[in-house]
Length: 172
Image 1 (cartoon, rainbow, N blue to C red):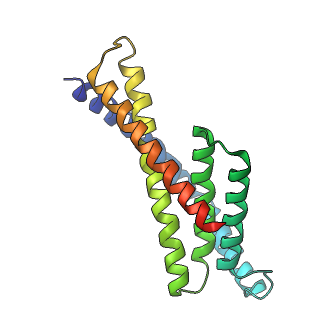
Image 2: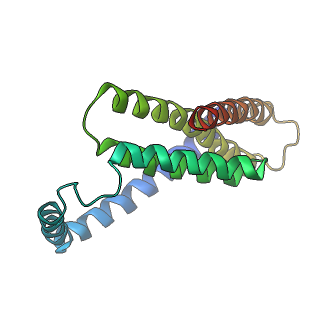
Image 3: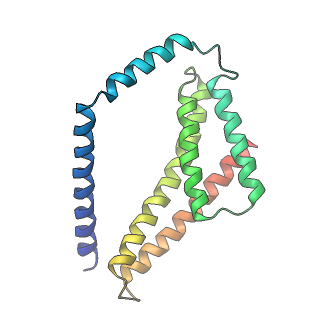
């Protein structure tokens, strides 16, 4: 019985966000943003043919991952905010790696990053869902749905930590 009100709340929230996104997209379409971005992309492509970079994109991505891994290892603990920070940083590293030539090495590296991102993203989704459920059922200490969400969240957090630590071990 608790799932229906939570699902309705999430649907309402999603609809509000979709309307906001649609409004922003309409504003962007009317602006000169995309024209400017195309011009910048053309200029960048002409000025940098890849030879001006100190490292190739895949090498740079690997170096950034190793630096990130050593930074996280130095701090020893990974709190929730650090795990979310890792998720965002891994996205940037993956985008950089995607600029590299399409090789088996590049594809494997990207696959590893995506795998970890997926696990962290799954944890993040459960964190958001659990937070929403906690607000919805704050007056009910023994809500079965809330207990279930917290249990799954704990398992997903453990999975995410394990995946990140494994990736960092490989990077180092």
